[in-house]
Length: 287
Image (cartoon, rainbow, N blue to C red; front, side, top):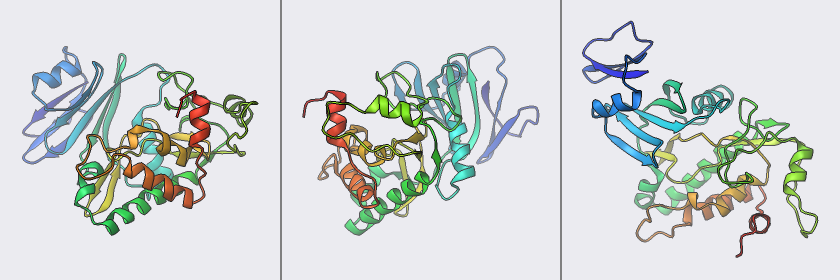
């Protein structure tokens, strides 16, 4: 697939959208790779991780995310569609088009109004910050009402959660309740986390860079790659143990871990137990 900028919409392309006085069209590629085509058209690079993951701007109204892909991996667009259908109260970005080309997945999203919580946090009053914590924790609570009998993603496959997988690059699951207890429990531990009869839908990566804010409200939650059904204990434990919930880069005058401390505290108040000490011991991390 490749993207073209045109003055009038071309009906021969399966996907088109308007951007100011111009139109963008996505359709089958004619020779060059999609990645090379984007660079040739000078679409600005927004973010890059290593040699395979990147985000480009497409005009003023869209972005294109590129990630590594392996067969049977659930695409982020499928997860976003699941959220739209099952928990429509959660603000999410609009998918324009998605596809897989070789060993990479491509996702074109409409830009979300606002800035990241990371950039907005220091401009907010204490009461506005508290309201933001309450709002995000409330969305977690809404998502957690969706349950499954296994640890799995929305299409029944493995979840992408490096903090729980055996090795950071591995996927986790699917795991039944009995398989999960065998995986997480240690006979020599004084305490293991409680695992009930079902698992709960969770974004699992709600750092301040993945929450878009407009007028001091959440305008969208982005980056759904890790979302899936997880143990109840993971909902408040993840922000306790993941530096991905920190302000990065650091915000002057703000503790790096302030967001994750406030979020996990609110989640605990909502009834999601925190097992950070167990997790560190389970992972063999000295504290």
